Amino acid sequence: MIPIKHYAIFLSNESDKNALIEEILSQKLTGFLANFNELVGVLFSKISISEILEEEDRHGFTEVTRTLNRSLKSMSSGEQKKVFLNHLLTQKFDFMILDNPFDNLDNQTITSLHNTLYKAANTTSFIQFVHRERDLLPFINNIITVEKKRNFVLHPDKNQFLLQYKALHENHFSGDIPASICRYDLANNELIKFQNVNVSYNEKPILQNITWTIQKGEFWHLRGPNGSGKTTILSMITGDNPKGYGQDLTLFGRKKGSGESVWTIKENIGYVTPNMTDLFSTRHTLEQMLISGFHDSIGLYVYPTDSQVHTAKYWLKLIGMEDLSQQLFCLLSAGQQRMALVVRAMIKHPPLLILDEAIAGLDDHYTFLVVSLINKIAAEKTTTILYVSHRNEEGLFPRSIFELTPTENGSVGNILS
Image 1: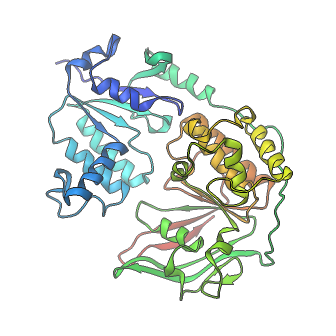
Image 2: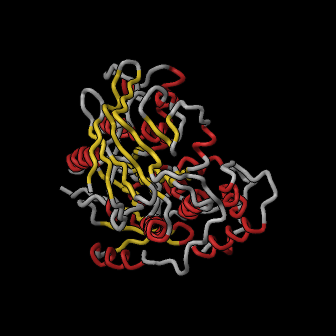
Image 3: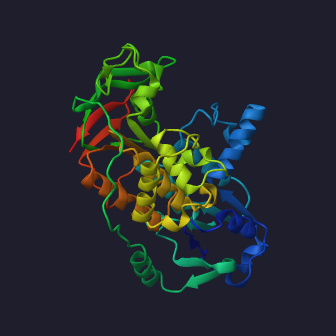
């Protein structure tokens, strides 16, 4: 019996991943992968799940959830991936492309997917796209990189490749973070205070008796499994969630519902989430995008001051992107865009910097750069950092952890140091 072969294709954020997927599924491979041209492949990816969700919106149901009596849309991202993977494994195919299957998942869901893939590996050939070495499935020994013009290179020694790969992703920042040109009138050291806060939706409890104080200069990691209420907590901190009214919730020195506006709350916050990338159209240069952070605007609609331009240029030099200042933001790589989003959020030196899954989808190189930048901000400035993620990140050093643990009565919060 011929053993099943599995391949891992290591990609960077500069790689044209969609073109590679199309090349594989359209049976146009050459060289040592040419045998896949005679086989039927399926794609396990976020894109595929999005297409299923669109079908569900149009028709009200799909084959994926036909026997579950529950819509895919009602599930967390982790549940969606598990259901979709199980559905694919019931279909007839020869190989499966795994497109970064563990992105944005908590450890419990990752373990569940690992177990499913291990069992299927005896009968199914996998091609795994890898941005992060930590996500490489251990049973995959055939390592591939992609050179220019999409030439596939097979590395015969997996361990030797991984040693060389780690050495490539080291860098550091020279110079200090530029000084603040903005002022904030916050006399109290307490920025955010939850006192026995409870949240329910349609009688379903989400948060239970959340008590948490965030003070100036702290570095927190908010973590918890998919669906534990992290997004709900963030929406209350930013003033977007009406569930904050009537609760014992204080935001930047003012009790929620005491006449504050959402704008006065948000001007104290710098916010980063990967989805923000889609907000900036083809009109925005990198420099304009950074300067818009002073105004919390999507786009630059006022003429910038000399000090704002100078600060933006200083930041770009610090992160090694000064030569890209007039490049359109939408044409940058995913890693460059994420670095820019962090700088845009920090450029006004806000009292609170929220980094919501700030490294999701990044390759190892840009993960290292973003983590290094976050640690530099924490070490040099008094801005409070709230890092939000399902998983711990190697090399990132938050000083305290607020962990959400789901229960039948809503998630409870615990402070870990």
